Image (tube, rainbow, N blue to C red; front, side, top):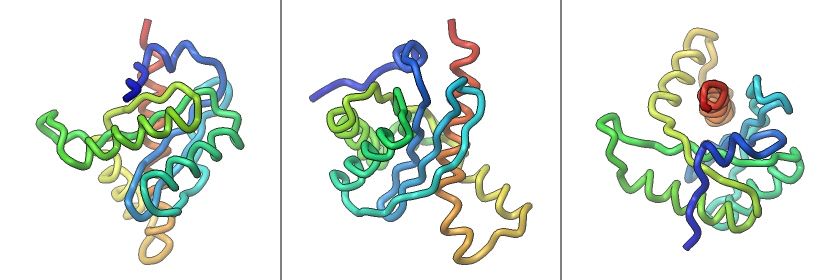
Length: 153
């Protein structure tokens, strides 16, 4: 089984970064600009299953000319990793194999809550909310990661 890359490896790669908020139903995607300052949501996919989703994300990375991929890791508030985090790590390893790109995980604690709060403030409800929350979560994960990368040596 391949190991995942570190954020240092991601920082040293060139090009955009694709971010993934992996979910069983919908998987949100976001991409950075070339300067890696701004994260923009690009939508979600829902092909179903680990392999089909990893394949679709690998294609999205190629289409967006990404040089690296970040997968949100749902770490518990106490820092432990449950079955959901293990599934995301398995997904990230498969994605690395399929894409041939550096892939790292990034702690996504509180991103869904932050996305929900934002959607509440903007009055986004119902079907529209379901369509954007995963994309917004991927965008928040990526922006947090980009901010962290700026301050790494």
